[in-house]
Amino acid sequence: MHNLGRTRSSQQPNHLLLTADTFVRTTLPGMKACSAIVHVGPASGARFTQYTAEFEAGGELGDTSAQRFIFVIEGGVELEVDGKTSALGGRGYAYLPAGVQHRVVATRVSRVAVIEKLYQALPSVAPPKLIVSNEDAISSHPLGDDSSLQVKCLLPDEMSFDFAVNTMVYQPGSSLSMVEMHVMEHGLIMLEGGGIYRLGDSWYPVTAGDFIWMGPWCPQWFGAIGKAPAKYLIYKDWNRHPLAGL
Ligand code: UGY
Ligand code: MN
Image 1 (cartoon, protein in one colour):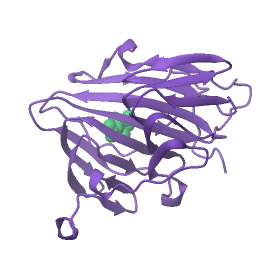
Image 2: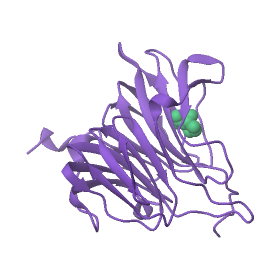
Image 3: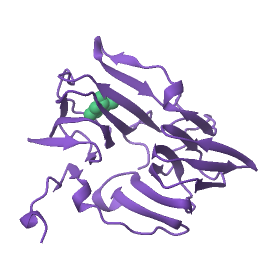
């Protein structure tokens, strides 16, 4: 018996809130000393998959034929590509184009956000190249004219990318200036702080560690509550025509 069957987690047709008390771990093919909490995927209507990989020291991710984006939430990993090894510590991230052979090996107990998406090529646009960086190296800009809400775009603003991953930091009391409804879907991990997320016609209290999926046109709004800033990592599909892929 746990909480008499109560949880903040909620599954709805156009959104999903998953809180840590409902996480179930699994092993994906090729993983060693590593498990995955799969948050979302095509089985729920999403056109990408996102999971949190939990590594023991020396643990390793499996392969993918899709593009992969990794962001170190906690701990550290080594990324091996073409015989070159890069160390990624906290807030380190990498974009791995589809088909690029690589290994992700944890140097210590680690938690990593992993996003994978089949690449939608554009005629006469070369696909993106490998990126290895750290969020600390990216400068932030306000969302609109609100300096209390700062955004960092972790991937370059280029049409070759068919998705975007950003971090957003809200000072306590700040909020999105509008209820957004848009064609893009989102995968979101709350990294710090918390507040109230409106999803569809429901308002949810959310906190660090929660995962949210928002389907296309899901009404969405967030307001930060508490004495510390709220921060999340957010994925969206990007730069492609709505009819692409049909
Ligand atoms: O980029 C976005 O659409 C972002 N502003 N959405 C969100 O934070 N829910
Ligand atoms: Mn949005």
